[in-house]
Image (cartoon, rainbow, N blue to C red; front, side, top):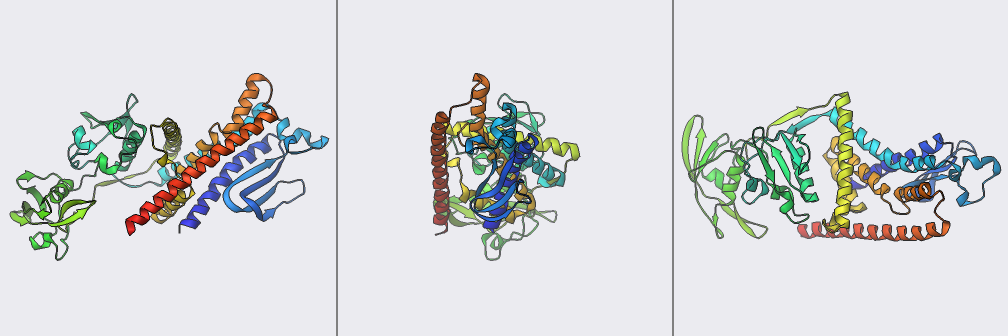
Length: 448
């Protein structure tokens, strides 16, 4: 599943990126010789007329390119010199180069707008009891708190519509090393995500779980819950004399009901069909990541409350553009953090991890896959704008120098900078691939 999903994603992103270059080049009067999807040997080609653009599909699915008429690549006839890329005004050459990344950003904005128009059921940002030791517990959050908006340190508040949106912003704040203020509609609390070590903030560490009613589902046969006489529909009122507000509180109590590696009996009070019952529940002990925890074989009867969210036409476009800008900004900040040593280089992923995510997203559904495409499209656009020779951003730096000095970068300097750019890209690819391999080995070790 992962390979077709990955190849489809790559094909879409490459075509869109190169089409941006192609379309603006044609609009500026530049002759485009070839539009290629993929690299290496040609598998398929089409050229309607000898003077028209040649469209090709090549064997190595790791990119693409648009080849334009350019005197730097060889002699150009006098009748076609005005159609050569190097003969176009500086602003047109810059427009052609920047059009590829811009096309990726436009694609991402449209995909995110489609998802906003599509809509869907999302869990409301109503929080359950935070686990002990979590950032949410340290901030003073309580079961039933509803988050209305969030704000980064020193930034304007942004409304919150779903719990997943809250988790995303909190993880992002942790990755960037700053705190997050939560507006609970009457009081404000602050998640101290900046205190965690780089890369250490994850969903369990945050403790931002959904509010789920403490009502039991059907106990698993042969497990402690069934043996204790618990029934489907029982509402848990207290455990060991402590009032229970939600399912997370039940889970926390059960997991902590051990003494060393021995089970510790609990006294439960439940409501069943309007009657109060007292039950003694003795868990079984299991080991989880080297720690003994209690288990009773019961899940909640239901999940978090959800709400259907769908944007209108204009609102969806605005949301898509806003989220694209936000993703691009976050990506740039993460790159800066990695270069400055404030974030781990393990955050850099390569084609293996991307292919894995593509397969998982495709299995999860079309909406998740479109979200994955939008995220990767933004990343591709940002990466290509980095001021690294051989990338679009490197060419923009050449043109910026030309605009400031009135003369182009010399061929000698271009050759030297190309070598530096190639080395940087090679090092980045090796690092990304090594991170991919390490991640896959860790997954394999977890299965053995």
